[in-house]
Length: 262
Ligand SMILES: [Zn+2]
Image 1 (cartoon, rainbow, N blue to C red):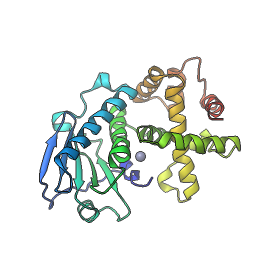
Image 2 (cartoon, helix red, strand yellow):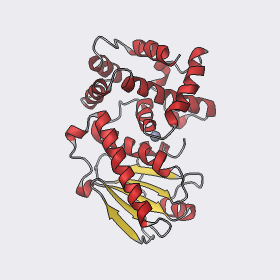
Image 3 (cartoon, rainbow, N blue to C red):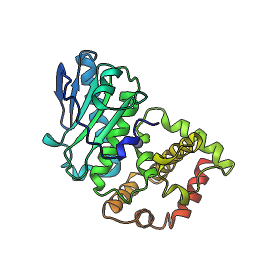
Image 4 (cartoon, helix red, strand yellow):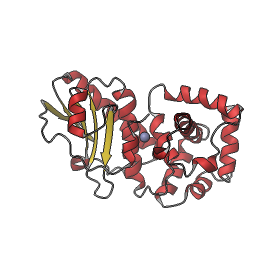
């Protein structure tokens, strides 16, 4: 899915400079700007979905206990443009894009998600995906050492219908040993990848491994993993300390994960 690759870059485009919105509504963590194309009832639904995803993801990564995030002045701005033309014009996004996220972790203030009314998978896919990126990055702080697959795997977990598809893909690949070895997955920067098949495997496998880490052993271990990453450990040492006696190394994770998807 290409729309979220920009989530990991720093973008300094400013939204809506010339676009007037009919409405603005707010919840605890989000502000929604929308135009005539979205009904007030639909707008309320978008915000209640956003709050729902926020709670789910915060619970998963363990940031709930730290939640000074995204309140009042730090709310995330969600902008729903009336049509693709307005979206493209106002955000500077390419015509194939159907949504994007921007954040600047250095100032911790600029967080926004933009899309347009016709984007059917916005509430079920784009919104949870981007909220996950924003929340994980906020919680971990410096994400320079966080593997991209981990970030993308978690982001896809809240997307509707994504996991069963990934499971089917990985089952077929693992049985033929055609998955990406974890040692290769770790440093992979998918934003530079051109091969469509590799991109597809990267996303499916990212989701599958993150799902394994959460659902095989439960949230408590996963929260410890996120906390260890927040405290600056490398991924492998965070893994070993968070899953003591369970996962002793990256290859251990790979072996157990492969067993589980077969
Ligand atoms: Zn993403």
